[in-house]
Image (tube, rainbow, N blue to C red):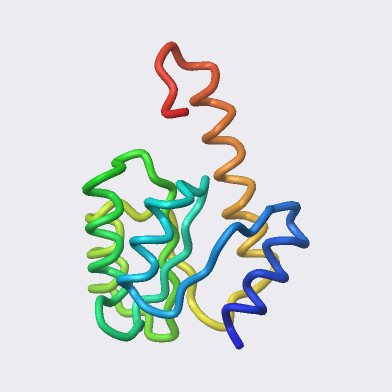
Length: 121
């Protein structure tokens, strides 16, 4: 249910959703297959959790724009997510305004990268 709501909210922000996954292993595979501009990972996923998936994704693509989502926001989770390379941290229920702010941050970062001599894409 949260996944569908997030997809709808992202589409409302003008984003094209190219994939989704129900567990951490699938999330990592889908990331490597599709190479999306942004990836959203829930901390609690079956098998490999979102932080483990984040570690693997960032390990293979340090420029990935990853957002961690969770219903349980602890300072430890936030610190770990940022230390692993997450660009943002969202607490459920995700508000449209916070999601829009993250999408806007991504767009600004992308614009800055495209002006830099060496860009990721």
